[in-house]
Image 1 (tube, rainbow, N blue to C red):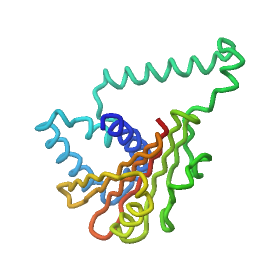
Image 2: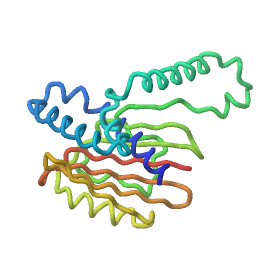
Image 3: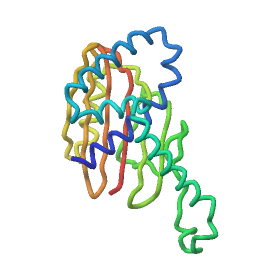
Image 4: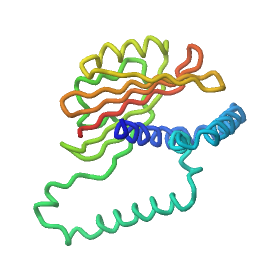
Length: 206
């Protein structure tokens, strides 16, 4: 479950990046700020769950933790800039670092469909074979429960478990997590009333 939680966190961070720019000019930005404040007050009372807050608002993570992450990113960049230090075999086996765009990931599994009506805003893909990670995030024009039923049926072979969360602003989210043959899939649907706010689908080969 811990690995699954970390996987969900990575998908949420991707979603946050996708929508952060749009939210700045959103007429409902005040409502978003109010909800953020309510969430912070909740997690202050439940510090053991604070990571759930940071996965939605990574910019609020304490500076020292951000510095550690930036330092790690800088070290990774240095390694990429010095390919002569790697053997020809390792260069041949290496794959590009995280790709973020709007096209479907090249190695997206055939048994995880993208339902008609989903408008993709961003995609992510990294690695190949064991350790491969991919994700898509976007919006959906249709009934939230219809979308939920679609993925629950389409991914039934993954032995799904589900989690439901209701926020103070009335929005809700359903997360489906399942595993099959060493692979893990995550589907998160956030909605309010009969409107889907966002949908994120992640895939990982362990």
